[in-house]
Image (cartoon, rainbow, N blue to C red; front, side, top):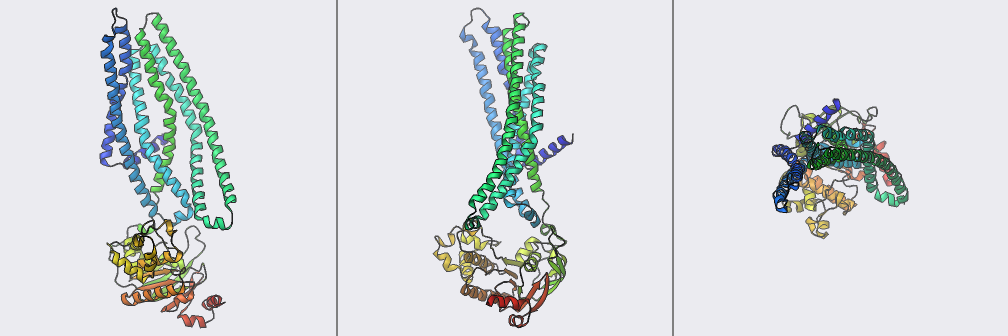
Length: 588
């Protein structure tokens, strides 16, 4: 009972993906199914009538059966035409449902907590998403292209069987259904678990494949192609073994279904001939009985495939709704008040503590307090794992921390994601580039129409304009996935050009110039400082290359989630401590 309830809830969710027009289309499909099921019964009835009332008459002429033949032709052609209409309606509905489902899934994943992606491999997520979307589409088609027509045709055939045939023949014909049904149910119950295992194994292999492609350069440097191929081959062999186990079971059950049909086929023909020889039924009734039997066994033959695929696609559809129903990241939740972005860009932090949800015992930021003045240029330095990047994630509302954090006097928790995007820009060490033109990559994140002249000006400030001019097509040059056809320095400078286009109130630089040569870095650094002076931009700059921080108003030195020292560049070099050790390490 609970299982049926769950299936109905799932079908309601799938139905909810449809627009109003498509929902009415399904009502039309149901009407077409009813008409088609009735039309399917005209052929066996017409052939029975043709045999009994025309072929047995003396003086039979071929011309006398032409109206019957024409009737059968018109009925079958008409039935086929409405089937085509039904198919087109279902295909249109299925593709629209897939489009809506894909859009919802993308929105859900892009809004999911970052912890979800730390716990799941990217390739695994991608594989599950594609297969679950395929499951949604197939589920719609199976219900209205295969399952519903089979049920409608079978019901209509049973009505004709009991109304036109002797009870003994009708019962004999219909008896094939429960026997075949038991075989099918047994087949589904034994194979369902294997199908789920196969889906999980394929998802894991997707994750492994993406992992290998992302590490292609390292694999080649370490010459580990053979090792990785062997590792992947072992997974493939486990998948193949499970698939063969499934196929052997399927072959066995298909044989039992064929045997069931063959036995009842012979019994129906034998009983019909026996009754006809005794004058109980006519020859035409034998033909009607035979054709009605085939109308039952046809859907029954397909019933396992339909129910089996329904079971599989139900699993996939449930997986899809698990993806869609991932709780939204805290930063997308409604805020308590909808105030405008403050004009002041001061940052106040009191008692800030942070640890990742997956490992709450490991404190990353420990009771941190900090004040940053409007327009201040603050450098952040410290050893790896000291909490520098975690502070940036908390400040950009990527991770949730305890304590107080305000921007311009407004609590960070009261900022919407959109308001933060208008306030803060960030240049990470590994910039995000999309597979599009240079122009659109520089414009990325802008919510206004940007002219080419503005983009060129921003590119000049980022010291990338001359490089772009040398590329085929210039600003129309197509960037490959993740900027693979650009150098690391070019990727960073494109990301830096974005900030000159956006002029943010708060700018965060996270190793933003690590891939640049000294000349380019100095040029860009001068442009950034110029923007700071002109716009009053508050800047936070994380850098391992300490010379990047020479002109900072203040440098914060982090260690074990706390600020252990702060001051200007030369002051920190002269004072014993972590900063001096890092500086001496660079000089060696």
